Image (tube, rainbow, N blue to C red):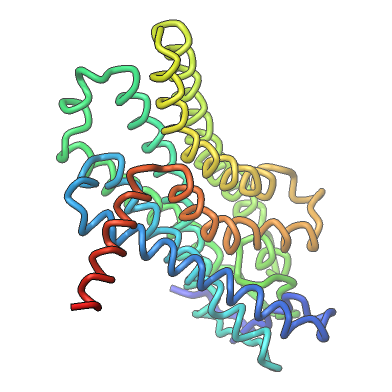
Length: 313
């Protein structure tokens, strides 16, 4: 249940101090969001429709594409509305809901990237056992587990934040509702909330990050010491390169935001970093995978040729 509070809505200031640039920012963010929806939607469609991509690797890639669409949709539409609106208000319940889905989808992506790294480790280092270890039952169980863990983690933050009292200013110096900006507005003791943010969220961000790099360490070690063929080495590293780039783009701003001390944070830095991992990175992921993954490019080309043939007929 929500705690009694005198604040019924919040005002998302975003970049209110730069009024003249807001139409320009709207055009940029709308373009990036459109690229995100189009690119990730195309990947999701290809993974579902093309039988050649019905494998664990592309099953998780489809999950990632779905996540990237949902992740940006949790924040960007409201951000776009506020760039053209004068009120920039969001209800208390709407703010908590946005916070919940932002952390739910972000945590899911963090865990999913670790699972994708494990999938590449098994495929390269244990190829003879791949079909046994990464069977469909295990893949579905992994997906359900990470979505469930992420939902419970986000629920923890949304419930704990909603139970705080907000009796003073209601202006959030951010584009969307997040835990840190809300805690700065709360009345009373927020030490438990800060501890949960730094400890639980920090752990959920750092552990998958460590496991991902551990998987790649074993992959690189295996390739250099076991693989004699340069072509096989290049092919394996090329397969992992796309995922590795996505990992860096996602984790770098997240770790910088949630693991560094709150006292040393800057509102301007937080806003810029938030734009990176909630707006820009989800739009870059489909470009990275389509440019570097030959099978995805081939599947997209086949689908486009079929569509053109149908139009001609």
